[in-house]
Length: 153
Image (tube, one colour):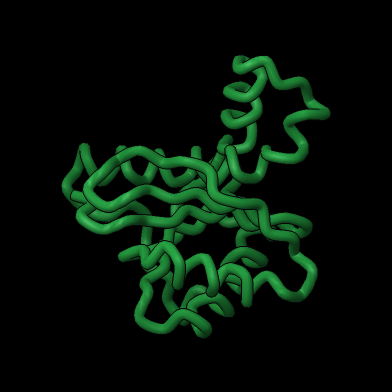
């Protein structure tokens, strides 16, 4: 289904992991870790302009039972701010449960210790988020997650 590229975002309070997929592929790869220092919206807008994705998947932290957590509200608020600076690029919220744990396992399996993981774990989590969304698109023929809507706020 992915005719145009996609970006995936793992939005944390200190760092934001970004991943991408190329047009007509279903393979996610790491792009960058953006610091949450007040300039993150500018940098994310620059990445979106550079990669020109058809849409952006933003990981939504849910509880293990599937409910929205306090962290989910933070992510929705930040995603809404991003949507305002990239009009015309749809953002979709996707379940990110266990993405950091999965990323840590993958990095550990690749021989990275926890100290080495710290520098890239956010990118790896963004890859996990985006790859799951791409896999869902391929399997279902539909976009993953749910659109970011004003009523999410």
